[in-house]
Length: 98
Length: 369
Image (tube, rainbow over all chains, first blue to last red; front, top):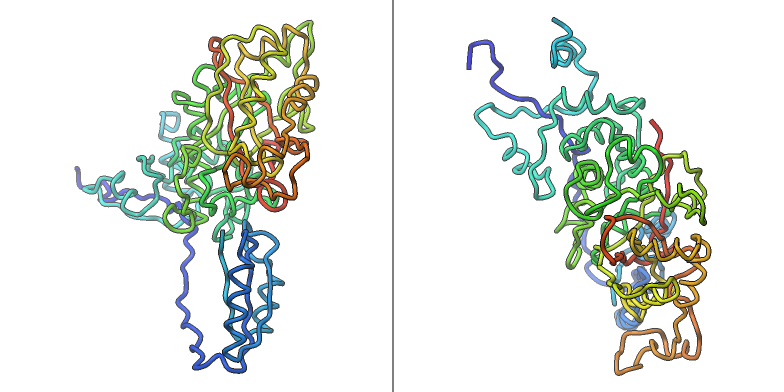
């Protein structure tokens, strides 16, 4: 290597260069009493069986339950659905099943 | 001096800065840059070509599009992906600049809501985007439609498919073990791209056999890439059929088991007809429409045999669907492509994935400069 040769090779970053931000978890609820809990069915077979059971259990613990469903499990939940859940519920449980 | 090979690239790098926006990553000359790229998680498990400014700039010469043009929102992260980022990954994949328009069109095809690359990537089923290229560009850039068409040996086929996957991995963040948690995965997740042999469409005399792209509404002169969500190919052997009628029954027999013999209409399929198999149909003067009609007639499935519990197997249609006759594939759900070497009485089946709005639609995109 002579004196004028660069000491490094420059590569172009193939990634999106996006930097994720850390966000604190929402404070945990001390009790389910009086909360509205959303149950999101992602539309996999038998997800409803699992969520029916959860709804039953949540009812015994004093929580009101709202049910939601994604149009298909293969795509992200539509923005409107996410907004609906966020504005109507104190907590959400998303169910995967098969 | 400026006409010396490589000199123009050096000058562009020094004085023009290439106009490239990507972050520069410095790798010391005492480092092995191939290892450095593995260490940064940029590869699919195979070594990649170092994306230097000069190489990326030469890659961008392969398209008339601006480096800062946004190609698509890249799943799963749904971040904007520019032509430049595609070029960086195309260099890494080993593409030549003339392949870039195909890579760009392929990415546009899979990033539609219809194709649903997010779901194709995230499903635990071992599927990936399968690309078929039609039109004059295939021959012009040296794609393979012949011997070993679904295998190794052709740079264009392999690196175009690989470039697309590297973009999804590096720009979209779709890495195996993270968002991509496929049970088995598939070679299709590394690269699965080939050209259709359009020879039968050019045949003098006899019935012309239209190409896949023509079947999907494009002119023969148009360059088109079709994306299909599929698994790895499997071989369908028929070495005895001498008539079109025998062979079409035999093909239907094999196709009925695509993905699972218990799945009907919900998943699509692709049939790659070899030239020797195709010649049976050409000799009988069948065109594509006749072939599809005959094949479809042999692909009607008696649901009594595939409802849950039939044959002691719990997988299957709901029992309420017994007593019906349903097509194995929905209308338009079987894509037929003609490709392969001149000898060999085999065709190949590529099983699909959940189709329609619930899953993935085969998607064709015109390739533009």
